[in-house]
Image: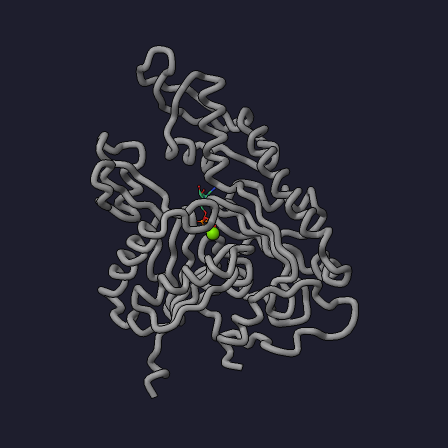
Length: 358
Ligand SMILES: Nc1ncnc2c1ncn2[C@@H]1O[C@H](COP(=O)(O)OP(=O)(O)OP(=O)(O)O)[C@@H](O)[C@H]1O
Ligand SMILES: [Mg+2]
């Protein structure tokens, strides 16, 4: 009886951003995955948006940290406290979070122990039941791809800390690859470049601004410029320089080619019939890094596979996790005979069986 009123939530706990989606409602929380801590006492002073606003502006006794690194939890206590804070924020409005079912997305290739730790953390925070789902599978569901069908779909997720490429068929991940590069490493590359070329030290947030305004994965047509402020390394004084989209192209080019290489490596392991599906259906590009100017075009040019940018690249993972149960996913009968048989089926199968109650 009670079950009918049970709420379902999807959580995308990312290196940069945390999103919570409520089934049938939409995104109910979107905050940066950061906390501000007191250096001496270790006490947490601020979370999310509020902590993010402090980056590069903290007094000497405060430090802003990302409790997740490369898509996995690096500091368990901080992540747990941050999630507790986020949940309490939405509980104010949706006090039925307690007792709900929560689908939390995780990066491909994490261990069973890491998965269980995430699930237990969520249950501890008030969820009745918690199930992990691989991020590319959640993204595919969120974008409305026919994941349960015997058709190959490829997802390329460019996150903040990691980028993943996965091939999905029959509700499971057939092959996947991930690399430790993403939007944040691109920001670091911008910081290094400005330091090398202009002897100017810039902050993380300035680097991100440069990336959003000037970076292009295809050769920039015009020459867009931006004034950038930082600290002169020689004189130690504030200085403003002008940077152009053309001069940072090389950095973005290297980044794009690393993604192309990861797609190639994944394709090499792809069963031939699924490869045929991909040529026809194309790649779903998602994650915040997918918003990099021209990345969809560039990946298409380099791989020869059509690339479709997700409608809401930063939301589709949380959305897919939260709508998991609305999809009629095949829980059994995956292994049809023939050459299109997936070469490797992950534990996702077990998850699908669990959620579909078979
Ligand atoms: N318009 C844009 N152009 C380029 N990059 C962008 C844009 N908007 C957001 N980003 C980048 O997207 C990244 C965040 O993406 P996302 O929220 O998908 O990461 P995440 O899920 O938190 O990380 P991960 O998946 O690695 O754990 C940041 O590095 C941010 O700078
Ligand atoms: Mg992500």
